[in-house]
Length: 256
Image (tube, rainbow, N blue to C red; front, side):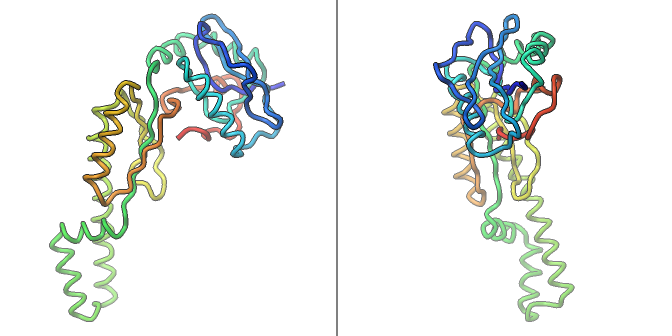
């Protein structure tokens, strides 16, 4: 039977609430595997596991409940090892790494921040800030819309100005948030977002981080700024056990 891995914690903090259930239908009971000073929160892995909403929530709920009382290194959804022995072997082999990560992440949460432009607002802003664009737009209007080539040129210049504004706004948001965080991890670029960054925040400083995010939201009104958290620190824990012990299913799902 293959083994599903939720997270890693210190053996001194292994207790789980009675009846904690994980992924699968019916839900598999969550249990603890010990390896020296470390422990892995695991369950039997269901066959043909896919990132369905019920299982994604089950994975997150295990981490949230276990992490409320202790530091847990969260594994992303879909981490499956061949068996229990493979998990404990990797815990033993990488014990120093996991102990260091537990020390570094203790008392900290992840907040994911995404930002995109409000299209109408940013277009108004780049036109207001760029005299050349305003002159070209006025000339086209006076010429009844302008020629095809003139409209294409204006569109290209506006697109370039918006692109430059994306880089400028992303850097400004990061300059506001970074001082209130212990670390940051830049996420994969995705269509529609000019910023996708996860911040590692000390729990006692969470109010300062959220206040900084609200300040950025109010000062950059042409942005749609979204903050998701607190989350388990997925972006600050790598590699996971199954990257050494087996092949993950649905890798990359379940974080931010």
